[in-house]
Amino acid sequence: MTFPVSNLLADSLLDAQTVVKRVKRGSQGIHTRSTNGDIISRGIFSYTTMLADSLDELNALKAVPGITQYAKDQFGDQALDIVVEFNAVVAAIQAVIDWVGVYFPANGGYVQAQSYSGGRLTDRPFTTAQMAAFRTEIQTLIDSIG
Image (cartoon, rainbow, N blue to C red; front, side, top):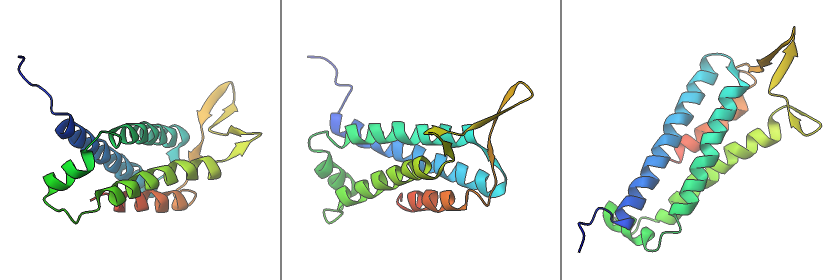
């Protein structure tokens, strides 16, 4: 027999909580930055890449057999509809990703994230006013996380 170093359910729940905390911190950060001043396209895409990676991780974790009941047991609340809460976070993450896909400036299907001038590529800046609707989506995501 070997020394046990893993409990799949405990590790999976902890991983899900870690991912969701990362999403919340990242969302709060970009929300604040886009409120306080211009934000460049690279910052937006870095954020949405983190969201997409987090979404992949969460979708893998929800497939762990027994995770729903284990989470209810750990939170000590059998009435907690952890699936609804989890799905709300996943939907809010997807909504932010989708918003960027729909509303980010594009030309011929290519996202206009940079401009070319004087031999240099420059990340496109977005003003706080331009990012207002984006912040609304981000705030919905933040609010879906306890």
